[in-house]
Length: 195
DNA sequence: TTGTGTTTTATTGCCTCC
DNA sequence: GGAGGCAATAAAACACAA
Image 1 (spheres, rainbow, N blue to C red):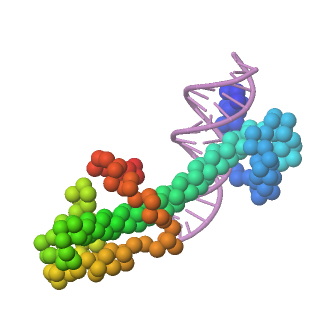
Image 2: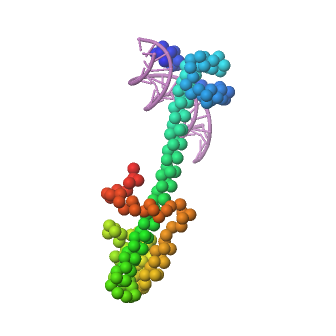
């Protein structure tokens, strides 16, 4: 736009467009977000506005439209992120449960190798089951369950296994067992989803 | 009525394209 | 160099609670 046009337009008193004018501009915008000069002149004649007002309206409309689109995209991304965060947390718990099962089965295997059918968990052994393969503490929920067993001292493996199994999520929850291996291999202290 | 937040219209300055 | 687009912003108009 030329400087002269800008200056001549400068002192005009601001007035809101009528509903009909807006409606017509909106209709045009749906098909032509960047109308050519010919179409702008057509709107000038049709709506009784100045050419500059038409041009500015489309400019502002494009800006509003763009920011609205960005808002919508953000909303979709946030929704996806929230869903993934829930899935991640479920998988993390599932992984912890499986790690307990692994520890129990390892101990059972040791017992069978070394003799007999005398497999029992003692109070002193249970805290070790609360550490994952990296030595990190398991989540509070599972720890609470095993703490209960610690009080019982000689809880047997069958009962432990049942508890571990009851912690497993059902398939209806929307995740599978195959995906848990990566959970403790992400490296570093920071969680990968942090922004 | 008035203070305040939001929306809409207009301006400015800079950039790109021809 | 002019035309037109965009981002940032000003300012008028409007909505609305207190």
